[in-house]
Image 1 (cartoon, rainbow, N blue to C red):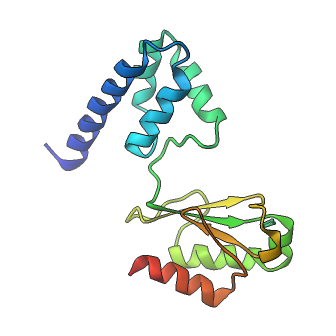
Image 2 (image 1 turned 90 degrees about the vertical axis):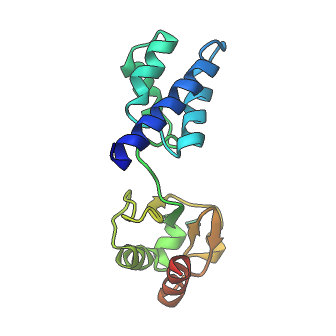
Length: 160
Ligand code: FES
């Protein structure tokens, strides 16, 4: 059995266990999909019909809920999520250049994950610390007053 197939089967086992644990609860869908995401790092597409069947829903209803919430992910994400602020304050202080540099360093576009699963790149509207603009957030830690050198240091450090 190849590694990817073995991993997918292990995931299915974990998904079935979580579904069994939550399916008897009163409003189980959201906590159930959150638990799947906590356990696996994302919500694999193959879990949707399993969840739907266990809860007596159509797969499209489960998918609809997953798609509605931005915090629910259907693709694997990197160990570090890099969020570049696209808000106005950051934009006027060079946020666009920071985003371009981050893309170049990681060699990915927005919404993508590096092949080594180290980084996922996202943008956000405003993270609420405009005084430090331009900002980026790496694994929930804010890095303010970004400049090209700081981008390089920050992303190089994560690769060491
Ligand atoms: S605009 Fe970037 S933190 Fe507010």
